[in-house]
Length: 350
Length: 280
Image 1 (cartoon, helix red, strand yellow):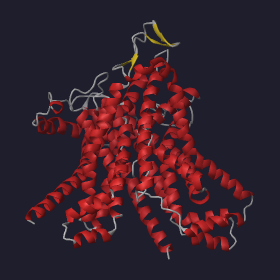
Image 2 (image 1 turned 180 degrees about the vertical axis):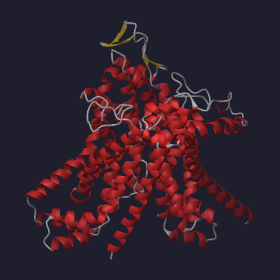
Image 3 (image 1 turned 30 degrees about the vertical axis):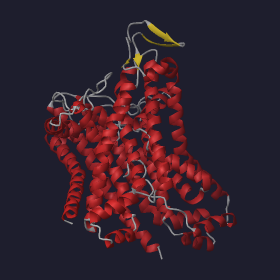
Image 4 (image 1 turned 90 degrees about the vertical axis):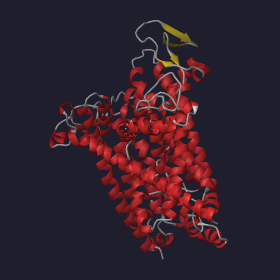
């Protein structure tokens, strides 16, 4: 189910304008302020999250400086050695290095490959669903979208390792390697790696993109499509020349929202990525790490660092992740609010 | 003309393939999880705890977390939704709604990290029920806000005008006139929130912890076991039996999810019918 916020009508404005004239006793005041308090909570929670991440990352920001974005390794250093390194008044264990670059590359790369696969699949599937299939089939087939949107990411991890991963490393690998494109071939891969993780991410973001696209395709006015058909265009030409241009902006917003979900995905990537720290993926089948999965994987060990710099540095990774996902989210929503006829659903598009 | 007809066929062939690529993974996920879980499916699975090869404590813990989310996220989310639909206006309304939607898009591991740093360590709560419930609620509250707001907004304005014309107070209008027809919509939003909570792991990993004993109602200092954690940890263990248990825990969360989706669909259909009857 996707929910949209439609504009207020004239009768609503009249109703709001008479608010002062309505009877308001002490009960009404209390109820109103309690409700207002609740309404502030989500916004306050977001502000609190951002504040706490910045506060927790601050020592790491000072300690790491710009090296954070150029260092290729993320190691906690010798936690039991006793000797410390000091930068700008902050201490870290000897040999520790905190660099976000491979993680950032891993996150962006896996998310963009996922988007590249998910957008055509979601759009194509929705077009045939809305335009060709009878309405009584559309509801039941929509269940699959809801199901995909709801499946826990740990289950996608399970599926990725045992069912989908072997398929990728056996069959899909052979197809792609047959093309002999440098970055797209290599030794026979394990079950875990960049391509498997990206394809699973694609499956995870398809429901978001598809559910928005479904509303968009339904919102195309019939009269423009009829016009195209009257001019002698075939059904597919009508879709390419009328429907797709009409929904273009909404589609971009939907893709950005899907991208934001892929960027922040933690557990599925943690299970399927193969967790290769400190390296860039050599080819599309190689293991890698993302920012979110690394936070989940290393936080346990980082807690044993008595200087706390490992935990602070993970917060800095989290800060970069938060900035990237929020930028995608804000951008997509602002675009949709301004140009799209259909509102965006919240979060996963359930 | 023949070339155009061919292009048409290729286009629809591609689109049908895309639809198949959406449906196939959904079916494959269900089949593979239940297939792998089959060896572990027995009564002892739900009568024994995780230290004895079962998942009893994890099932109870997940249900307890859902109850907590229903109370915390439910009250805040429904209240916020009512305020946005009925009372807020202008810039306040736009800002509060916008950032609530943005919150839903923030990565869940960030919520887990901040929950750990502030609640578990900062407030000395330890791995605890309350920390887990707050972390989960932060994640799902925007869904409840949105569905509540939409459910109320769909009600025609003349309903409110008529009630006010009869001299009803604002709270009475809300309780007696607006909430009853909006209820199915609101409840389906709560169900979406529960469905998401069932499957989350990242916010819980460092707030709920895990324990082999059954969960208790203590809010602090008692770790809570839950299903997704069993799937995650047993998956990393060696041996076919651990993997079967992992899949079984996954299968239970999927069953819970399917039940919730079913109830949600039933309710949202009822909600649509209720508003259709009311529209003149």
